Image (cartoon, rainbow, N blue to C red; front, side):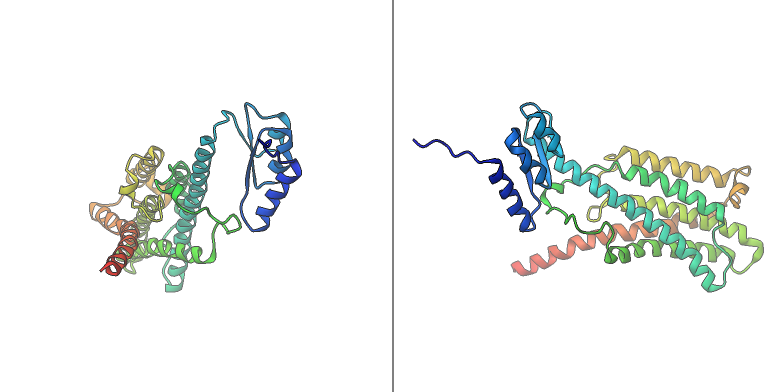
Length: 300
């Protein structure tokens, strides 16, 4: 019986380079000194932590501390979750900030006074925008994360088409905020602070709703599970509590150029702020139903 053929370090390195030349993303596992050149040349070098040599571990990007190949799968899933969370945070931040810019720009074009005071914009960025963004970074991976094709590593984090898509939720948040401001203001300078309070509250509540919509591009917030990300739930409740307390207390409301809203104002705030997140969640259902109907029609 012929002895098994042993690949030399040069052969392993050539295999890795040949795959990379085709445009493939190459991962290489190894434990011996002869694996080190190929491990280092691969896009992802993986060394055995128990049986691997010091040279191979030094050349690797990732070390399996348990020498279990199943850990590679778990690491890939975790990596895809981290990548998706970065996109969620960026999506939420850009959508909220685009909404704030559109609010001020549209009001200036219309010749209206500023719907939001500078201190109110600062509060939105720090609390109702900032708290949920931090919690979105802890979102668990989606159930089908490992069934999707890998993302092109050369693709930009935010592409131009994606940037245009971000204008939709930002535009909706701006629209409902301007509607709330206009309904209360009605051209009366004496009601300007009252109108700004409503606009401030609508913008804040809309941003909290945007965080729920940003949890997934395809699954609704209910499908993701209300308690699957406890950090987000705490962040939303804390931000909502701080926002409500800020505008309701006669002592703190003047600090942000606001005044305590009436019950009528709160009904207006709740009704308008629910619109953007409702549209976003319904759009996910529509995108899911259309392929189903197309497939059903083809089957007939």
